[in-house]
Amino acid sequence: MRYALSALCLALSLAACAAAPIEIVPQPVPVPVDITRLPLDPDRPERTSVGRLAWRGGVMLRSRDERFGGLSALSVSSDGGRFVALSDRGYRVEGRLTYAAGGMLDGVADISLQSLLGVNGRPLARGLDRDAESLARAGDDTIITFEHHHRLRRYPPSGAPSVVASPKTLASAPINGGIEALTALDDGRLLALTEEMPTETQGTVRGWFQTAGGWSGFAWKTDGGFKPTGAATLPDGRVLILERRFPPVGARFRVLDATTIRPGALLDGAEIGRLVDPMAVDNMEGVAVRTGPSGETLIYVVSDDNYNAAQRTLLLMFALVE
Image (cartoon, rainbow, N blue to C red; front, side, top):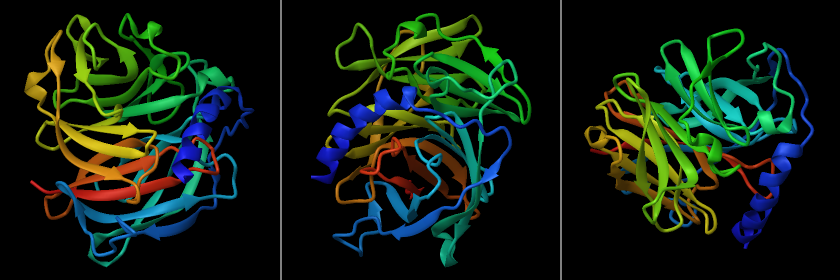
């Protein structure tokens, strides 16, 4: 019942997010966050894996600060010590990740948030301009995509962003169905997936990848109500695609062979794990990958609570079992 209610609230929140008043935060400000540690499956506390994903801990985050929430994109430092997330209201949220004995994720600390800047060097203020949905690292810079006013921006470590040329047809994407998943491939080219922009092939959504001549399109196969919301490039060059279903609540992880990416292709991926109620799952939207100290591939995933009290901000960690 909670998730049926959440589904209704999600539709309302999508419309409200763009119009909600926003507080401009020109400099980072600290944010208090309460932490609740989670099992993978409360009905089966002994469970330690799902598919090819081994549980490495998870937490629910809540804050009395109403600016905290709506986290739709995630990046984690190579040593696992810090994270950056982006919110639907144009905030950059960052802080430390903490771990228990054995390397299990058990919390966050020193959380701060700050308004993202526009190309004019001023904080984003208008509701339709601030809906950040995905990010990809490009050297020291970060590429960020936005919905409503669909666009890509390149953010340096400090200062105003620059414009990144968008795929020509991106402007015709649904308001809330633009680029939700973005990653830099091994060779530095960007790969982008929309959530709800259909192609001519039934049961697919539009994607693009960068070429020497700009952007080339492809179709990404979807089914079961799952739509792409995040992407990250694995250490071996494959692409991890995060998809969410809402309702009923669910998330799945699929792996794409990067050698199959070509103009006009119909791309599919092998499922490696799925989260469903009552497991630790909500509106999962951001995913990040790093290599752990023992060489294992660690996957982090965060949920977007849509600034909705019926939903949760979850931060989870898994190890990929090959």
